[in-house]
Length: 409
Image (tube, rainbow, N blue to C red; front, side):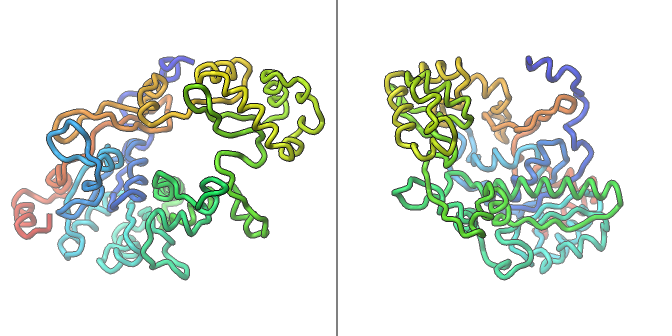
């Protein structure tokens, strides 16, 4: 299918499938902002509420190169498609403005330590009192209840607590955390899924609710069943780049780089063995099935490693593609960013930043044929939309100046 064919019935008058939905993003760092980022990318009007000094994502290095201002890569990535409102939520006037904004909103996302927003008078019960059908999403390390719910938590701690780190790394090396903020990302993703599910329920019944997402729970949910295996008492071994039931699978050295390749299906094994010049193993009962290959992992792995070692990366990838064997170059992010497929899929988009210069920002993953999504605007300058949002709430210029003088905005 051509790209133009996929979008042939697209509407250009909407921001996305969530056009018309209002979200308050009262978050910091990554998990909460990622949740609101997903909703913003889907077309929601997301108002990001920040303290006057701005949230931490604005200060995380490295900063975008070639720009006149210090613009964090994190800020540019996770806070695009949002409007920025500065508000001191710890003061009564800030609380009242937040509740006024909540009355006009559909979803609230916050990821402060459990109990913090309730202490400030903007917790779920406080918002529910002025907006009964609100969808209120709370993202935290360990959840809103439970024995350790009130502990401070960050992404690596949730990775460690979930069991993930124990399985990551080489068999003879130490446990290794993920290179990305995977718990934050999954917490944000499940927060967005939860928000949309609760919104569907609200639209059907008129009932709002509190959505509680723990990064630890999200990581355990995405454990591919390992949590269940752990409950059964099964020993789980760290395997590096190998996969327990897919043999051979590994990273393999070619003449000029590495590939990730392997087989899962028995039919693919037959193709691979013959391609590698081992017709004798294609139908051998000790190799023709997954259990057999698991017992003969070293032989299978060496066979494919020898085949790859005689080829360049391009040759190995192309030859495997011709016969339907899964094989891909092990690339750097810089190499991935230069791939024409990356750009054809709009995974990098030229987006104007607050200094007027453009930067290539990661685009939304899901594609919609009828309601296309895109990075509509770069991450906003701190407080860029404060007057605009407050004016929408009926706060006139004189009142805004008083709030500004008092340090509320």
